[in-house]
Image (cartoon, rainbow, N blue to C red; front, side, top):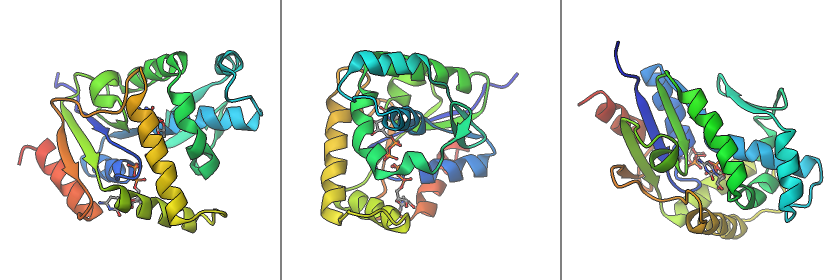
Length: 219
Ligand code: CDP
Ligand code: CDP
């Protein structure tokens, strides 16, 4: 029996993780799992239920009544596909404060490991190479300048016809999220010592995909 291929992709918001991971998955014919989508789905639920986001007790009560899954590239919240809704900027603005809660992370990590078990997989997030899949065969840390990441995110939001945004606002929000993600007590965003860093600032999506595929296929 061959070992499974496991690829861990981590890095800050807008670096290109999910776009690149999806294409690498297609090229290698393996499964892609977006762990950020899971934290986003739970945050969406809290917003929909109008839970006070500073009330950890209420948040954890809600967690018990929430089912999240990632199947065939779709994110499910209580059996409903919420691919679109989880990308709303209101979710982006709140997700990091939910993702830093210990019990929330424990629940998600359990689910992520279960999904990855016995499969060829590429998984992206913040703590995949460091915590979720520390034994992943390949680990990449994807970065880009804050200016470039803000520009990319701004473009994505304009396409979605989000109102009340500006490049400057998007940049501030990304900086704030990066700060919360990389300074939290549990599983902060950081490069795993054995991860290969790829700076995508001046690279096309296809160049980044080729870089990773070549390494995985041993070229
Ligand atoms: O796509 P983008 O970089 O904007 O974010 P994402 O990957 O969808 O993740 C959204 C948020 O979820 C992050 O800012 C983190 O707060 C949290 N997250 C996490 O804590 N751990 C992960 N493995 C993935 C995401
Ligand atoms: O998942 P993450 O937040 O790291 O980033 P993403 O959502 O995959 O990428 C944000 C945007 O940057 C997308 O519109 C990508 O198409 C774009 N991108 C790019 O222009 N050049 C790259 N080398 C990588 C991503």
